[in-house]
Structures are given as C-alpha cells and as structure tokens.
Length: 129
Image (cartoon, rainbow, N blue to C red; front, side):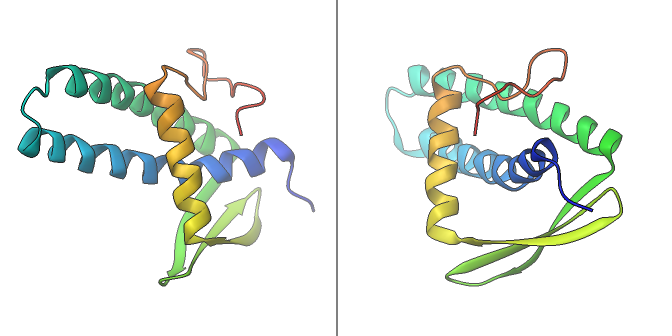
C-alpha cells in the first residue's frame, strides 16, 4: 500500500505545525518580557496563534477521520525521526533539524501574513506546502 499525497501532506503538517506553535509561544513570552512597545507585536503574534490553533484543530479532526497518527521516534542534534500510522500502514520520516527550522520559519511567515493551511470548512488548501 502506498501513501497518498494528501496523507503525506497531512503527516508533514502534523510535524511542522506543533513546532510553529511552540516557537510562536516562546516568542510571545519573549515579547512580553523584553519589548517596550509590545502592543503591535503582541496583536500580530496573537492573531497568528489564533489562526494556527484553528488549523491545528482542523488537522486533528482530519487525522482522526483518516486514522492518521504521528509521533516523535527519535531526535538528536542533527536529525529528528517521526513515525506515522496511516490506514494501518506504518512508516517513518527522517528530517534534518536545520530543514525543519527553515520550514517552521516559512510557516511562521505565512501565519504572520494572515495565511491559513485549512479552509473554515476543514479542507486542506491546495499548493500550501
């Protein structure tokens, strides 16, 4: 059995979006502590986090419907390995951490620009990867 492109994209988002959330939350705390005129930045980050939370909610719903589970297998300084189960098919994806960081930054930029990966109806937007 092969992995469909849409399932592979969902698995990819299940890896990247939690990293984006973690980074935004760290940045939010950093802004609160160290920036003097924080209001404009806080609003921007808060709006991006709200969009991200909505996308994560949609992602979890779709994962449950399609019976997709993603989990961290191993991580070191250079590589992170994520396992997944999709339609009773098991596999692993190995990522270079520097590449994960670049992809996380790209996603953060998209969220700060107001983009979303899922529609309000829960469908995955095309050409988002």
